[in-house]
Each structure stands twice: as structure tokens, then as C-alpha cells.
Length: 511
Ligand code: ZN
View 1: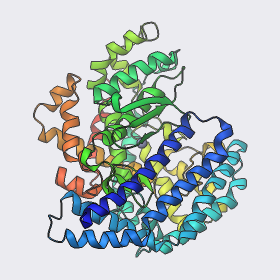
View 2: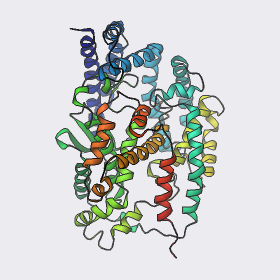
View 3: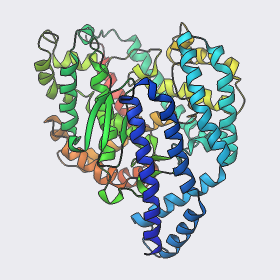
View 4: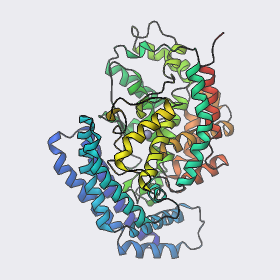
């Protein structure tokens, strides 16, 4: 075999291990009885260590060297060259992190998460504080090992959004705030009232599921390579493009939770199902740093797709004009006094709230800015852990005019810090911005796209996204995808225009 073939065969086995790990993760979160938790954690740790050792081995170094020599003159944008480069970048980064430190972080994650669960239930930040201190210390050591020039946050961000830095994020956030704050103030000052009582009626779960899955399939979700299950926290997970699963949770007394949850996960799933078949079991469907088998190129890129399908399509007026009659067929009595326009307005209500995952499109990014600012301050020592709840509450007051009544509705609400995912919050806002840039480019480059969307025909949009993004897997970075597809780097202007237009119209006072 050639050097490149040997390299791909080696990487395929690592991808197999990581996919098997994902199957066990999916099972743990959807099917496993509670008694299985302890042994499952050991199984996951063993597989993770196997993949890690195999990848960070001298064998990988030799295979990389040979493949690089063989591909010396090849097209730098070709998949083989990109595959080797992607593995090389991951390899160099992983070799900088001492294996014991990785093991320590992984082992501590489970412990810290358990403390966080208990602290949140008891509404007691002091109980979580020592674990957070220790997790922060591990994250700082991780950042030092990876290396950085500006802020330690830059090193941690590499794991999620390789092209992003703390400095670029601060600039991005400032540009967002300059227009989001006035927009939020206008919606708050508006006399427009939104009726949403009908969202809280009795909605049987099986019909919620039927409708959501129908929509997911109309978006292009292929059930021959997918399935929808139930879990406490919704997620999408793939075991190659041929098996891409989603989960949701149903609230029988609040219709939007499962509907928009499924639309969101469908966006993630379309990305994974749309990866080119040739990239299956390759470096270009492997996140070597996160030790995760995934086709999407970054967290932000992935989130751009969940948000595009959930918000830009699923929360659009066109969508509800088209699909509301079908929804009302499913729920004749519950929606008897509701029109498509009333429904559209109800699911786009702007209301500052304490909980990030329930936030609307206008207030969502403030939740992210707050977290990212606090993360940076914790990492560089400007903020002490003991002062975190106070800083959180001050930030909520500054951005949204709210003060959490307690820490479980405030600083303790998210799992991310207990799991050591410092840096990952920013990718939600990056995804929001990217989603509109990509959607606008698709509209400009696809004749008749608006008309197709109005008809409920999502094929042209999905084709464009597949052509410019999905099929490439991890061959191009999020930044490269954006520049190649839209001609621009990450830029919040189009996103802010979209929010201004949509919510300006919704909250314009009727005379
Ligand atoms: Zn998501």
C-alpha cells in the first residue's frame, strides 16, 4: 500500500473506536438503566484512552510523514491533502498536552459534574465552588500546555473554534451590543402585546412527535439513516453519515419545546447526513482534539446549521403560513381559536429571561456574552470563583435588567463549566452569525429560493448548503467555508440586519 493508504487505514480504525464510543454515549443517554452508569463510565474511559493512545502514537507520526511526502505536489485543497493536514494539526496539538493531564481532566469531569448536579439541586453555589476552582486550575494547565500568545482563552477555544480568539470575540460582541441593546429596548418599550396562552394547552406527545418528524423529513432528514428518540437533554449524535440520530423531550403542556428542539437537532443532523460518502471513516470526519467522530468542521459551524433550520426557517412567517394548517389538523381543539399569524408571533416573542436555553433570538446573545466575559475573567485571574455569583447577577442586570432570585436560576444553570468546556459558549453566537451569512448567500446564489421556501420546498436550500458546506466535512475550517461560500469572513452585519428587520416589524406599534 502507499503511504497515504496506510495513513487512511490507520485513521479509519481510530474513527471506528470513536464512533463506537458515541454509540455507547447515545445508549447511556437514551436507553441505559441507571444501574449501568458506573460500568458504562469505565467502558467509555477505556475506549477514549484507546483512541487517544492510538492517535498520539509514534506510528501516527511515521504515517503522517510518509503521507505528507507522497502528497507533496497534490492540490492543497484536495481532500487527501486536507485530511493529512487536519490530522497533522490535531497530532501536533495533542502531543503538546501531557497524557496524565488529559486523564486528570477526563477523570475530574465526571466528579465535578456530579457536584454541580447536587449543588444546583440544593441551590448552593458554595458547594460547587471548590470543584470549579479545581476545574479552572486544570483548564489553565491545559491552556499552558497547548500554548497561546494573547489570552489563555485562545488555547481553550482551539478545541471548538480554531480560527477564533478572545480579541476577535470581544470585537464581535461589541458590534453585537451596539445594535442589540437598542433593538431590545425598542421591543421592551413597544405597546405590541403578544398572545401565547395557547402554547400551554394540552398537547399529546405522539402528535407532537408526528408533526416534528414530518417537518424534519421535509427539511431533508433521512430516516433510513436516522431516528428520533427521547432524552432528558436533546442532542444529535452520529455514527458516520449513515446513522445520524436525534433526541428530544416532550412537554405535554408547552408545545414549542419539542417542536423547535427537533427543528434544531435536524439542522445538526442534516450537516452530518450531508457529508460526502467518501469521507466516511476518514480524518475529515474525525475531531482529533475533542476525540469525537464528527463531520461538522467546528462547533460554531455546526450550530450555524441548527440555528438556520430552527430559527431562519422554523421561526419564519413563511414557514408558519405554510405549515400551520397541518399543525392545526394535529391539534384541532387546542388551536381552534389561533391563526398562523398569532402562532408566528407567539413563537417569536421577545422577553428577557433568566434561562439561556429558553431565550428568544434577540436576548440569546446577551446570555452568551455574559458567560464568555466571566470565563475570560476567571481564566486570567481578574475574577475569583467566590465572586462569580455576584458578577453573574450584575451582568444579568446590566444586559437584561433581571436579577436571578437564586443561583440555580443564575450561575448554576449550565453544565458547561463543570464539564470543563471553557470556550464552547462562544460558538453559539458564532453559529447565529454564520447562519444568516450562509442563508443570505444561498438566497443570492439560488434562483427562486424564496419561492421554493414559500412552497415548503426545502430541497434547493439543502442542496446549496450540502454543496458549499456539508459535503466537505472537516476539509475546510469554518472561516474557509464562510469565505468560499459567501465571500466574507465572519461578520455580524447581516445577522443584525435580519434581527432588526424581523423584530422591528413584529414590535412596531400598530396605530
Ligand atoms: Zn445545537
